[in-house]
Length: 516
Image (tube, rainbow, N blue to C red; front, side, top):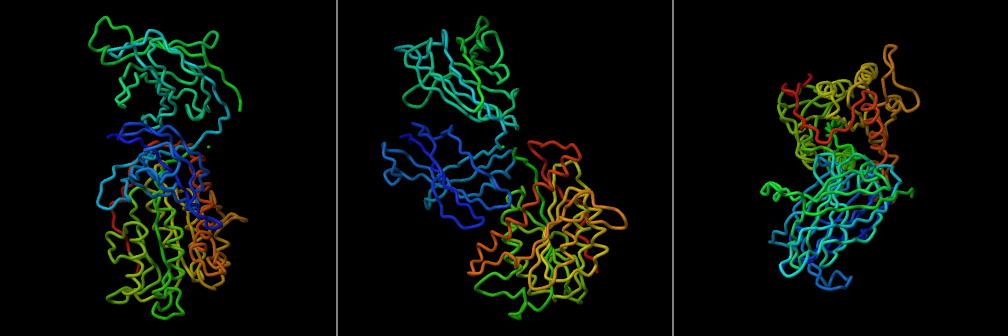
């Protein structure tokens, strides 16, 4: 028995205040299919710097009741909006879960930024001499419209109603936003397929034609006629002309771009004090995260959605390394200098906790080796396919200010941004100077090409009621707020346009160099 499918969509936003899950909407019901392609779209405000949790529930509809408890639950997925946006081509595929011990299939979620197009279009189509597909009657035709995507695939955007037993159907006029039809790109291909409806869901293909919004709006009296072509019939029959025609009456009247780049994130953590002491900011409290862990988790959980392989090089600076106690400002948290990559933010957190047990924390606070390390990676890929984000978490007063300023000025012409989170009660005046919001940072008479540094002191975001989740959400929102503009400023100044499918990042061949 094929189910009648419907998806419910429930977002939760974690930003200035925590909000409970609420149902945002439901798709239409599609009868008798195990592979539904839903038409209804959901328009959401997207905030790069916020964690926007989403839940999709799939149901088999058994009646006209709107109460979901009256229908069969088929599975669900949890994700974030950033995870969808950060997927290649804005297309995320996940396995459905929620039913123990059962494979529930997969769900594909696509995201595309809406253009700033405010036009809507009213269209009405009619068919003429369409192919007869039913043995005991004529065809029951309907139209399916597809918008082409930047990666060459197609997304369904509209279905007409079914006109029963008619080879010369006249479908009802319908209105839709131009952005839904072509995302504001008047020359983008629009594909229209013609089907004969069958009760069992196995609709018969009659034929198809392609057009564009610009083509639709052309012509004398704004009238267009398209031949409906069935490629299989055309290939088999020499005298085949078409499977009928479809004509259209058109009227137009007046009534956001997902950049799919691979963000590559480096994490550096400053290691002062004794983590065994409760007074240390690195103290491993069994009941709550320390300040370093909270800052790392807050920023990392959002930024990881934009990294394609979720493998992060995580390093520390300011420590004596075993076995001989050498001082390093650039060491792998996982203890492997040849491969400092950690699997996801959870992997970074685990490596951080393990490193606290093996290294001896030691000053001074030198930033320039850290910045130069990431700059070497960024300098190897300047075509815009990769963008590098360096996250530095520190509680120390900077010790190499002059060298750090020079490193930032040099890095400002590279595809990278620097996030600095200050934890603890120290004075961070020097960090504010590095931020460059008021006065552009300079070194040796040379100004930075653009502002690439964002600094925030974590203490300014601590919730007074002790709600650490809210504290972390506030921190992430502000610390990531400048990343999109910094990213765009690099791309625009170099005339780099969005690439639909960026190549995967391959680190340079040389191993991580540990400075002594």
